[in-house]
Length: 295
Image 1 (spheres, rainbow, N blue to C red):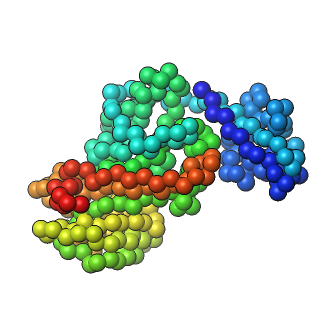
Image 2 (cartoon, rainbow, N blue to C red):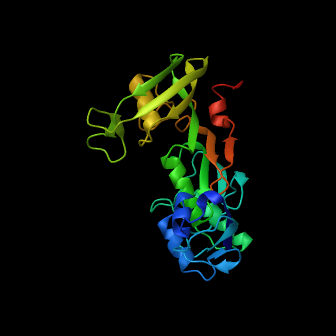
Image 3 (cartoon, one colour):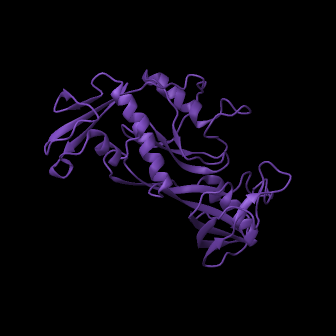
């Protein structure tokens, strides 16, 4: 399988080398190397072109990206993925709680990657797993998976620059203020590999929230982040005194929910090749909706 991408030359790029032009589009060094090593990987108006050649004021630059990588070590599993969106460059998947994104030594077959491996086999296409960012196993919601090396690099840059970002829905114990910002550094708790806490020597972490509803001792909050620290939302709300129910690390109250009540419910990004703005939402899952049936 290969991805074909076209770029139009214009007067503004006339005289620019092919390499510089493509780097300005966000094409990574690795992808450029692959293009140079691929027969007819780069052509201009139908003729082979080198990365050192200069572009004319008019023309069509064609990139041919064959899939050279493989994720053959990821076993297939019969996992039905809720694919919210798909195009030539990416998937958006609504991940349920309890399903990890990546395989691990302790969990090799119950992940998004395993389900995607099976999907690619049915399509008879080479499979490479390229997750952009991640969600904790017990956090539900929207994740992005790149289909090729070009889109993976472009989407990773979007994530780093906050062009691609989420809003979360969190159920918190108690009545939250109407809105607020939690600016408190987060670091690893002493004596623990996975537990995090607010501590003076931690990494800078900022969380914003707005309370959307309150019912029977719980608040529903829309949450967005300036930073992306491990367990940031869970740690910050526990620190503030409004922990998420069902959180085995920070508030192990399983009376109403069996996992931390956190959902990545909205996603913004740009289509990596065309730049078209994309926006997706995923409804509150049933185990969180029991707190707010009318949400």
